[in-house]
Image 1 (spheres, rainbow, N blue to C red):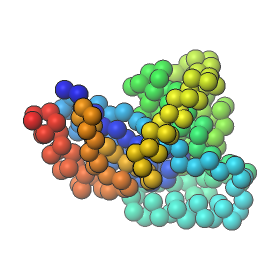
Image 2: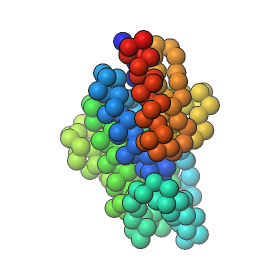
Image 3: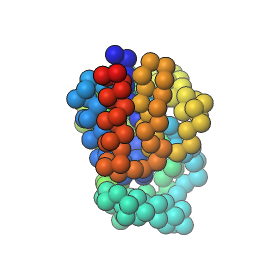
Image 4: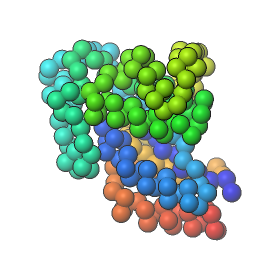
Length: 210
């Protein structure tokens, strides 16, 4: 069987944080049938302008909407420190790097970045922060740091971004189911588990049993 889930996300996308418990449950559902999930990094934002007070209020409004819709918890007081540049490339590259070093740790790394950013107020655009988070999920600091700065991981991250753009995916989270060369869209945007689990069940029945 050649089937897998492809989760297109960005660890600094607030709707992806809201979707985290849902996609974890869906990944577990698929794993019960022997179908793995792979992360594909989308590259949400490349904003080089430092966050000021007005921008922080705007972004916190997005966070509040996600909290209201999904129930995921945010640290509204500590989050989005002034002066941070909302450039998600480094956080995405950190996940791509861990995916290459130890595929099983890619999702834990993405989740750890999300927790640090949304609940602990950490600036996850900083390499030093990402090195620490990688170590927390079991990747040796030196091994991660050397790979993270490498041209190979810059290229791999850019390749993920290009793949997403070429598919015309404009929003995250997006969950795709792949069998062979065929892709099925399970969701583009947040949906609750009770809406998506039956869709995944039907796809798994076709992909695994069909």
